Amino acid sequence: MADQKTRNTLIIGGARSGKSNFAHELAMKMPQPVLFVATAEAGDEEMRLRIERHKKARPDTWRTLEATTLVGERICQEIGALPTVIVDCITLLVSNILNKHLDIDGEPAKPGLIEEEVMAEIGLLVDCISRVNAGFIVVTNEVGQGLVPTSSTARLYRDVLGKVNQILAKEADDVYMMVSGLPIKIKFFVHFAQDTAR
Image (cartoon, rainbow, N blue to C red):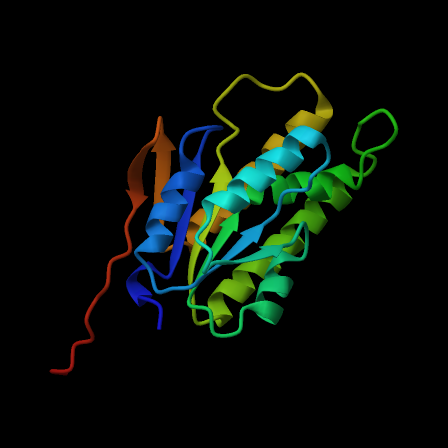
């Protein structure tokens, strides 16, 4: 059974901040084997090679589930008795949904519909995390600390991902912020023993 004190961990940080490596380190300390949920799409050769490198870096005992959308639903369908799950990453999951709704000029055709679909997706994931008897490590990017994007698409993406991150951080037991490969714990799970004297 997964350790209930760390059953839901969120790792957030900028690009190349060490999020995925830290997720792997945490997972290796948790019950094995691990279900690694990959949300990336191999849209070009560079991304395909990157995905292949990531696959080779995982232990052979880990199982990979490729799910570009409907992540919570897919996990609940396929997890079986696996005790630990990594979802890497939410950033690409939101991007996958956004890209389905862009017009020929790369602009969001229906911003409201995009946000609605993203929130439904995250709702399914949160529901799955609450129902499945496994420890979860969820990886996401912090994209709101730079300059305001000049395009409406980028602004929509930043705003929606920011809302998603707030939801996931609220639901998480532990939250780590990654800075230059260093994990900074910014939310702690406090376990209160049941008072049996009453």
